[in-house]
Length: 547
Image 1 (tube, rainbow, N blue to C red):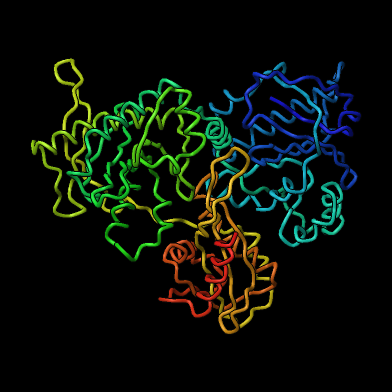
Image 2: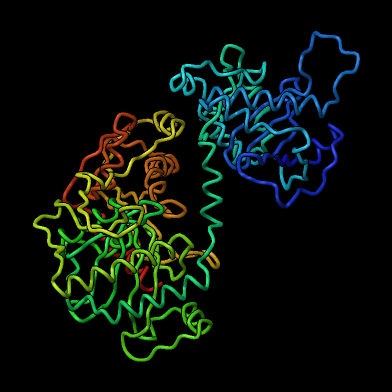
């Protein structure tokens, strides 16, 4: 475990900082600690760098037992921190055995110099009163982490931006009277696995040279098979990965002689979304195709090949000439621009899917199998591996798609934001709100390009733009949608507007707001078309095109 400490804490406890082993696993076990003197008491506050979990330890814990050799302040704080962290995790519902396994021996604690004490951003997370949350979810009374009882609520939070973290904590104690004080509070406590999952996503290895050789070899075979001569985009089948159980659903493009490609929609939800877009036909916004998880191999002219791919082809010693002759592989995450870089898993998955797709292409060409379906809800042909007399063989089976596999987005509204808006006087205002893909690719250096999503609020009578912000679909598209209600409330608070009615035309935005209807402070209505938003969006898109 790494504990990064400030210079003040280092002097207070007489700690020495040393190098951190490069092999030390991060995740939950990286903390920042600092010393605070509040209300005549010395506290050490530990903030988890990944989960924003907060543990408060008094520097001098009352001890009635006389000890011949009392522990050093460092040892005392370490033991107190371990005990209180373990008890807090158990109170949050983590299994006791898992907590015991996660506990680290003393020699696994490494003290390092902190770049900063717990920041305002970290301490701002400490806002949702956890006592009711823990009791509601687990039935367990939360552990008192300090004899001091503190509520870090929205009323004080709004005034903290002008103070340092230490001053902010002191100010809260000064302003509270004894009967108003409540237990120390927390918010946004994530599952313990979340930090590790995020690290894995960020560091997931890219596919190897051997995988690229296999992929380009399969691309050559797909080009030779010319499946677009025998299949339409709506004639689909699937291949089930024997290792992961994930199904890749195949759609072939190029029957009209323009864009030659094979798309692989990953999973039931992605394929159901794709079929829904096919049903909608010309009414579909082009941006919606970038919200479907898919992998794709297409055949383009050289001028459309990414420089990264040209460099890769040169390294592999592969050469292509002519129109629609250059193979290109793309990974498309929801809300992101097609990306010519595949991970190890994507490459392995694509290899398996294309190998079996070639078998189906040949049999469709020879009329030896049929992949026709009368209705989109009918079972679909899927190639899957079966064990037959101790041998693994590929067979054709029929797979029934879930009736409602395309789950709707869910929203989350932070309690402190809701309470803060309720504190504003209610106004008889009607607001138009929209959320849409700006089709404006952005990217960090060497990062996956993504589309910026615009969340905008317009006053219905005047057309005045109340507020607007851009959201990113990375690292998680669903998390972006989940954050929309809280983003709306933050925008309203900045504009000091507490409306009576909000109207929307985006069905997904309506679903997100209705999913938390009981928590909203205003009424939401769905309309066919927003009166003022159309002109605003035209102006925004004009600026985007010029950009």
